[in-house]
Image (cartoon, rainbow, N blue to C red):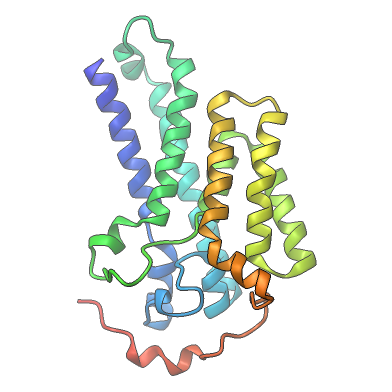
Amino acid sequence: MVLWLAANAALFTIAYLLGSTPTGYWVTYRLAGFDIRRHGSKSTGATNVLRVLGKKPALFVFIVDILKAVLAIAIVRWVYATPELQAIVPSGLVAETWQAWIETLAGIWAIVGHTYSLWLLVGPGRDPELTSGGKAVASSLGVLLALSWPVGLATFGAFASVLAISRIVSLGSIVAGVFVAVLMPLSGQPLPYCLFAAIAGLYVVVRHRANIARLRAGTEPRIGEKEADPVAEVIGDTPELT
């Protein structure tokens, strides 16, 4: 039992560390030399990168944030397929039954890492007044694609449809969060996957509280709209990393 619990704890730690990779922060600092958390929506996610830097950097961030969540679950599946893991599963437990729960928990840890990045909480970019990650949309999509790719693709389709009509990324994200919470159980997925969909959907909505307020006020920016303060004017006041 102890070895099995330790193995699962190690998988959760790996998932959190993968999710913690602050892609948007690193890409923005590398390309433009400033902290993305000081501009736009203050998030390190792909949406804010799109708003501040443009399409290509945002697409790169979006893909990497998806893949790091997919990798977290892929590692769980790989480990659970090994004879070494099978040998330490406690008697009376069925590894296949527990695997769905472990996959789901690993996905949640990857999302937590994306939202509260270890590197931004304790690293050289640490600033208690700034956010420490993104709003978990891309990483949540990565988890969904890894757990059930049909549900993941359908959810992305809902997001893309709303985005195409409204040109508001946050609105698409909120609608997708609600959509997946309904679709996962309707598609007959395992209980852990359904619970994840409900929790992740709620989490995405909660993380968009400020966006919801701006949507209600009619001030939420659409794709293509520029921020009031151009990036070129603020690069110089960003602190250097040491």
